[in-house]
Structures are given as structure tokens and as C-alpha cells.
Length: 470
Ligand code: 5AD
Ligand code: SF4
Figure: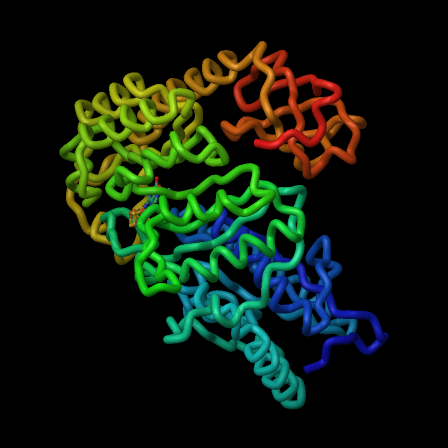
């Protein structure tokens, strides 16, 4: 495969990531796969030889965005060809998995469609696309090469992906579990990401050690159903997420551990206890509940009721009194009545969330919810979302305000917009703006929180506190 341009420069890849943190992790791994082929990262599509759109299929809006972006990439490709150069267009992620061949039909300029389980095969796919493009050029036909790989291979992609390379600003994602067997009736994930799979514990631990060696002090464990983790250990036993967290916390240099996304059904006793036992485990948990109505939870096939969720919250707060909660909500699921929605509002009031994501139900083709009667009108969904977001917004502001006056450890991640300003995260995942030396990026520093806003806090770095842990 050619890895240098005709002018002798290295080839460049631009990767655009949509959707969840799993995609952010996967995009990094795709960059890792492409690096040995000579691909450096490009800051924008117009400076790239290869563009990868790592897509999200969770809601209609997310997948439609991809097609408009593909239209822009096609225009860029046409411009390039007029100059006698190529642009390879690849679609990765969940839209690739779910819509496969349809993508190439809707946008013939696409060269490669690669599903989330096949990223380790990108080098072969690129070589094949290059070969096909050469044939098309010889025949003076120039659509995209149309190479497709959306199989769920028997081998695990994790065994074939290279070790993670760089760590950005002290914080790293580590994918430990993928796929989902829960089949919530609104959700495409079991179809796009496939059956639940847990990476073996030893592989996770060795990747964590590599990340720490590369500068990570915070590790976020990722999985679509991360707390369903059941990885094989070297002695043949099976480790739960709690067991894995205890082992990860033993690694010298790990100051913070997070995990996301969890399902209430898999919050077992050991995991709840770990929140009180493992100091590195941050006092913050994203635990999607989706609805506060038993009737709707049942229709969603969530396999738990409102009471189980409230009970978990109580037990978590007993184990770790300063634990803050975040969640996901869907309004307007088929059949949701005003009363059901009131139950959701009531649950939010009862729990009090530090932050949350809320969405209007989006009908996803192929999921049971899409075929249900009683779809809720858009206007009703909008009104409910508005009311819910107002309440959740108030709670987020109140939570941020409650931290004002406290001195907390902040992991600084990047420069702020103002010169001299840094942006970091508290253990509760709040963004903090503070003036500080850019050399503090990638370390945890004590900052006094002086002002709370809807989505962030202003802080002042406490001098002499550099290099504190946790
Ligand atoms: N419509 C709206 N929101 C959805 N989510 C998943 N599927 C849908 C859908 N069809 C939301 C859920 C999930 C989050 C990642 O996205 O709240 O937790
Ligand atoms: Fe989707 Fe439900 Fe699985 Fe979460 S648990 S990924 S919402 S099917």
C-alpha cells in the first residue's frame, strides 16, 4: 500500500467522532492502527488523504448528520480529483454497522464502510480500496471504491489492535466491555455493537499499566453495559467489575477511576460496596434510568422498576455519602401518558441529579419500540423534554452551587479560551476554569471553587498543592 504521497509527504488521516465515549476510544484505536501504515493525524478534512467518519446511530438525528457530512466529503473528493489527487472516504461506527450497503448507495463517493468489530482490518480494507480505485480510474469511472466489512468476526478485535499510544492530559479511556444483551425496546445498540463481550482481566490490567506508563492518572473504564463486566481471569475464574476495580486501584499511579455506562440491574452489592472501599473510585456515577414510571420501564424492557433504582441510589449514598449521580432520560416513549411523565419528574425530584442527559424518544428502525402503537406526538415530546430539562438544569446549578467555597482536586485537561486559563474536571465531572500554568495540564491540583454556573465552576488554584493525588 502507498503510505506516502507522490510529493514524498506522509499521508494524513482526519477522524471525525460522533456519539459516545466508546467511539472516542475507537477513533483513537483507529489512529493507532493507521499510524504504522504511515498515516499522521490531520487537523481538518481538507488537509487529509483519508477521512474517517466514526458514526453514531442511537437517535435519528445522529445518523442523519452523517449523510450531510458525507455530502461535504463528496464535494471535497470531486475538488481533489480535479487537481489529480485522491481523497479516501471511510464510514465507521454504528451507522456503518446498521446501514452497511445502504451507505454506499446513498453516497457513492464512499470508499470504505467498516463496522465497530472490524477496525483491526482497516489496513486490508484500505489496500483493497486502493486497488479498486486504481481499477476504476483505469476505466475512467470514479465513484468510491465501496469496500464493506460489517462482520462480527470470530476473533476479538481487541486481540488484533495495537497497544494504545498517547494519553491526552492525564486522562485515558479503557474499553473493557462491548455490546449488550439487554435489548431495551428503544435501543439499537444490541444490533450495532452485537452481543456482550468482556475483555479478559489480564488484558485490561496490562492496558491500564501501559496507559499509566504513558502518563494517565485517571482511567475511565468503558462499555455499553460496563457493569455487566464478567472477564475471564488467569486462574480461570470470572471477575466482576468490582473485582477488576479493586485490582486496577492497586496499580501505582492510578489516582482516579471512573466507569460508564452502567445498567441498574447490574449494580451488584460488591460494586456498590466498592464505592465506599476504593478511594480512587470517584464519587460520581452515571446510571441511566430512562423513566420514573414502572409501566414505561416495563414497556422499555428495562427489567427493573422505579423502586429498585431508588433502592440502589440509597445504598450507593450510604456507601459513599458524597456520591453524585447522573442519568439518561427518554421522554415520549410509546404509550407514555402525562401520569407516566409525572412519575419521571417525581423520581428526578426525589433523587436530585448532579447532571443528566435527556432525549425525545426517537423511533429506530428494527427496534420493538418503533413498531409499538401509541407513538407520542412530537409536540408532546417537546413540551415534556422542556419541562424535564428545566428541572434537571435547576438541579445541576444547585449541585454546582453546593460546591462553591470547597477546595477540591481538579485534573487539568486543556487550556481555556482566555490566555492563562486552564480547564479541568473535579471528581464529580464538573468543568472548572482557573488561571494557571499550562504545565499543570495532565496533573491533579487543589482548587478552591469560587463561583458556580449551569455547566461549570470558576476556581482558584491553591498554590503549593501541585501533584496531589486523587
Ligand atoms: N431515542 C431516544 N433516546 C435514546 N437513547 C437510546 N436509544 C434512544 C432512542 N431510540 C438514549 C438513552 C441511552 C442514551 C445513550 O441514549 O437514554 O441511555
Ligand atoms: Fe441499549 Fe438497553 Fe443495552 Fe443500554 S442496556 S445499550 S439502553 S439495550
